[in-house]
Each structure stands twice: as structure tokens, then as C-alpha cells.
Image (cartoon, rainbow, N blue to C red; front, side, top):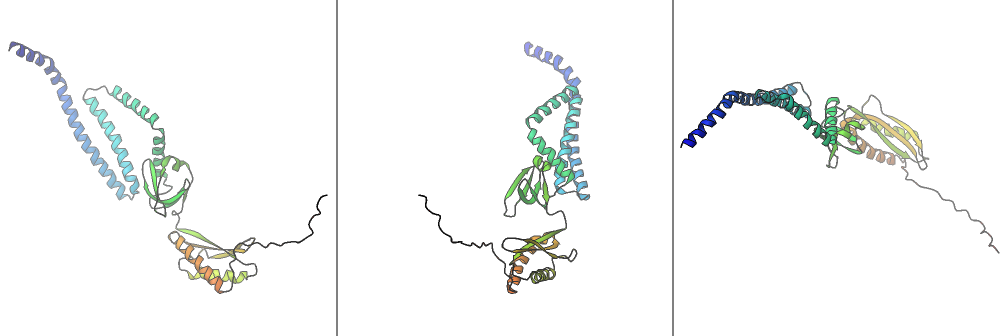
Length: 282
């Protein structure tokens, strides 16, 4: 019994002063961590509400919220470590060394992250727009931190890393309100060009989707091997581009053929010349 009592007394003499010295700090640090974690969540919610009120692109909400949360939580952990008695200089140096090692190991991912930041800041495209990049075309479905997701017209999902997307050429088909529709049609050399031009212009003026300003025009685009190529150029709303193109192309063929104008296919005339066969060698 005396051994147990003496051991208990030694523990009291050893640990009690330590608990008295550091227990208050640990309790205060734990309380600060809990309250701080709660405040970080509230700040995130406030930021998302502010972005929604300002009409900021919804794609940007999650990115900024995640970034703010990570930064504030790191600062909170450093502060709590200092309150608990941990040497913050060493702690920060350790975080810096770990960040450097992770950065070297994930260079490609960091490049994609930086590309995502540039896309969200400069906004060369946004969700819902049709773009062409890296040899692929589709409607932007998502702009995530590391990659952008496109949905092709035939319902394929294309994932493009933000790094190469931010450093390459991007064609945005949806940014402007209007687009020019070029309808190229070839007629036979014997056909009346003026009649064909008037038929095409009549089609364009009769379609309500075609803008009056700039007015539709028909140019003689080329004298090719098998046809005289006419180009009907008209302006329409971006959303009406493809319906206008396909429907007027079909109507143009019907109206031109009804007027007796031929739409020729590539053909070649071959003349055979008969002559004496060369004399046989002796």
C-alpha cells in the first residue's frame, strides 16, 4: 500500500505542476479552435451569400469558398498552436517545407490549378457557352479547379485540364449575340447567276430569323472546275445559327431546282485522241 501511495504522490508532484501550467493553455486553445472553426464556416456562408447577391458566376462560388476556408483554417491552426505553447516559427517552417515538397510532386496539378484561377478571373468562357479548344468542341458543363468539362453535341463528356486550356487558343461561339451564316451553293456555268442570286436573297429576306441589318448579300465566291459558286451571307442570332443554316440550305436547293437552275456535282470530260501506234523496234 505504501508503494502505491508513494507512486501516486510522485505522480502528483510530477504531473500536477505541468497540468497547472499548461492545462489552462490547452483548454483555451481547444475552445479557440472550436469557436474559430465555427466562425470560418459562418464566414464562408456569408461570402457565398454576398457573391450570390452580386450576381457572380455560380462556378466561382465554390472555388472562392474553398480557397477562403483553407486559408482561414491554416491561420487558425497556427494561432491555436501558438496558444498551446508550440513554437510557431518551427510550425510555419514545417508547413512551408511540406508545401514545397507537395508542390514539387504535383507540378502538373498546380499548373492546372493556376489555369483554373486564370479562367475564373479573365472569363474567356463560362458555363453554358459553346467553345472549341484543343481540337474538341462542346458546351461548357463545369469549370472546376483542375479541369473543365465539355459536353459535345452528340452527348460525349470531354475533360480538358485547365493548364493547357488557359495557355491555348479558345474559340467561343456563344459570347456574341449574333453570328454570320455562310451558305455556299454551286450552280452550272450555263445557269443565270442573277436569277439564282435573287432566289437566294428572297429566301433570306423571308426568314424572320435573318437580321435586316446588316442586310443579306450574295457574292460570286469562286469559278470552280464544275460550278459557279455563290455565297449567301446573312446574320442571325447565335441560338438560331444551326437551324437557319440547315433549313435554308434545303429550301435553297428546292427553290433553285424549281426555277430550272442546276446544282452540278463534280465531273470531268475526257477526250480520247486516236493516233497511229508507234513503230515496233527492229
